[in-house]
Image (cartoon, rainbow, N blue to C red):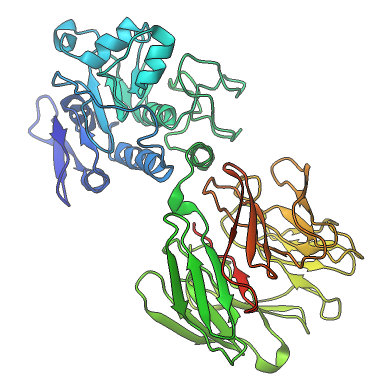
Length: 527
């Protein structure tokens, strides 16, 4: 077993040309694998260091990309309950978080001690002459239910290639695309079944009932021969679906309120329930909470806006940011969001008197100034990523007409649907409720407690009654269960109660903190 270790692992592989003293050499950098803690069997090691110029470092990127999907989705440790020990030098072994193996299935001499291969052949799942690669992720429960025996040797965190076949990153006829095969097998580890050419999920004898819903990327297509359109990477759609299957506690939104009369942030952490208090703000300065991820570490930073001044405490290192950005006498409204797509929230204000947006780009420190809104129409700023390009779109909701005006960052086009009731006092609550990485246009109607969501995934309507008319409920949608979809939720100031309708984990309620302090609920999101 080759275990990739160390911070910098470089191997130079040379292919000597017949009749010459020159050689064709390539540099293989294994350090990304080292950082990910990936173990390689001798067969996979040989494959990665093959002198074939078509097997190149691009495969390493595919390995690491697929591993990140496996790790980030929290799927590791869920598929199967491996407790056994494999034997045989070329068998997937008990490595964490997973290992990559490769050997010739048709060579019985090499396979005679490989418990994994034996058990798969016993289950009728492995044909050495046609199995290009397989994933060892069957649980004991699955084998007991399906085949009547327990496979103590069957693990969870391994992918094995059959070196009886020829692999290449640029496959010729009869060869297999090694990167695509790898991503395909990782898809199975994440719980996805095969997809037919018509992009429908096949019914298989494996515990993989889901498949990618992205019609433009067919990672789970089968087979993965040359000429196929299968991807060499785990797609965003795959990651999303994996998160739906395996909600990650670190992706859950915290329950947070800001107490203005004390300048205190009261946080109930989602992943362990710990209670913390952060003093950040002035009790007599009328500070406005503007929590967002300003430092790009994936977590919201506590921050306040004080009459044109931004005071931010970075979650990454505890450092502070103090920036003047806004006009004190103009009634500027703070609208922090990631407008430039660099993974960090930009400091920004919307000037309602003129309909102007002033954005301080975090990527280069430059100014983006856009006129988008009507100064006399009472427009409400509603920036969000409506087009799914990773950047927040400048947008306003016009209460007087119930119309949305969205300036798409992807192509500069305009989206302007009518969605809301003019006389009902609807509150705009755009968010990604359906999990397609695009914000859905939505309103909350306090007079009835109804939510009206225009799904971006299919244009359909989701109408949900969740809220108490007359109770002063404040809409606080966020991803509280960590499944990649925003949950409908309200905060009731009179009782300090939170009512949350989780898309995966169901209904829950809690009290946080105490009533009578004019606490303001804060969207404390995680990426």
